[in-house]
Length: 112
Image (tube, rainbow, N blue to C red; front, top):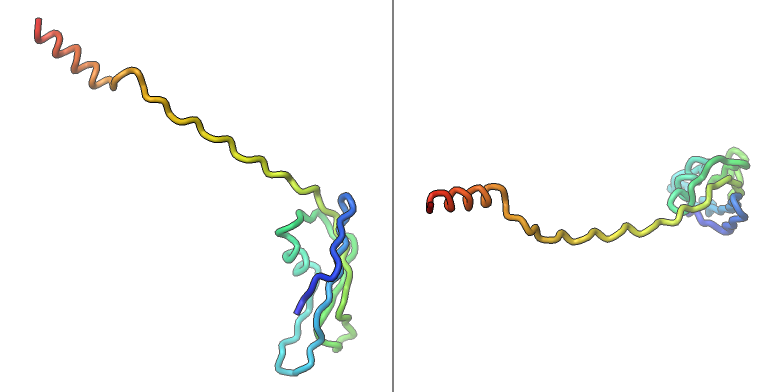
């Protein structure tokens, strides 16, 4: 299967070297790995802006494809996630509800 052999980040340049095992049995499917698949593989760790050097690797020697390849990407610096601020607990209101206040006034009026 596909293995990341080398992964190095120098400022905003990412160098990635991948190796795929050669297919030995005809029942195993042919697999080709292009830049779009490598980007989707690395998307969890890095935000890739552009590809500087592309490559294609395959698990078969048909078509003169290699089993190892190197990609170079330009990435943006990882954004540090700031923790969300804690919400302040709601303080109980000192006033009663408007209905409760109106009822109180009406009761006081009726007593008089």
